[in-house]
Amino acid sequence: MNEIENDVDKIFEYSYKEETVFFDKEPGSLELAKKILKIVNLAAREEKKKCGVLNIIIGDDRSLQKLNHSFRGIDAPTDVLSFNLYDEIDINKESNAEKEEKTKAAPVVEGDIYISRDRAIAQALEFSHSYEDEIFRLVVHGFLHLCGWNHPDDVSLEKIIARGESIIKMVLIR
Image (cartoon, rainbow, N blue to C red; front, side):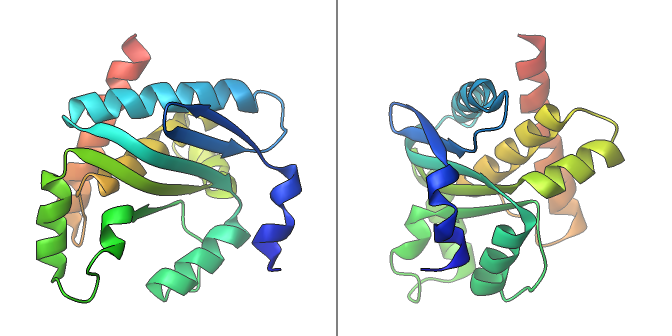
């Protein structure tokens, strides 16, 4: 059993349809999970997608660093990681561009979004907004990756951030 699995007894889940948010027992976590699912559904509508099986896991720097190292070869914590279920299909047979186009064309979004609570707290302080707002930004960013958005350079990074911010503004207005 690895360290991530040892924490399973501390994790709760909140589900709506096929979407699930996994969270810990901290005060306000259930309310945050409910808001996250609303944001995901709004993002899906804006991207003209439907949510299939979608898991959102809020962990810590340690768990995201392990995932980042295992899947991206980067031995450092990160704020958000997304794993599209479609990436697992024919992973060695398609180029990255082919996978990206197939993901963008898929009508249903399915996958996992992992968010570091530690990075969200630090980034909320850095950018002078609330922890909850930063979690929302990271969820939307991860969701956009599942929709096929990518940012291999600064220009595409600016585009995905702008798209995410436009979705966040819609949520905050409602």
